[in-house]
Length: 83
Image (cartoon, rainbow, N blue to C red; front, top):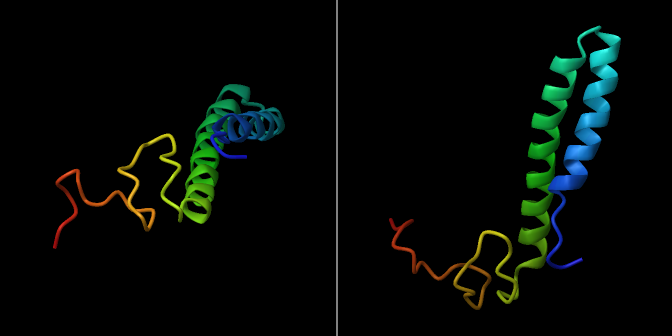
């Protein structure tokens, strides 16, 4: 599933769970808001873990881009991250 983002999946799950919790607590707006925040974070975390696990070849730049180094790193061409 190369090139697919799981942020939408995380948002959908987060909104559903947040709405259920919001209805149970009698505060739907807070529940949905918390669900959106948690779902977006969950989706980004899943994307990052899949990119890390499958990005060892350096051919897939992903949503955030990279210079495509042979070890999957960005090659340090952005001028940051030195010791």
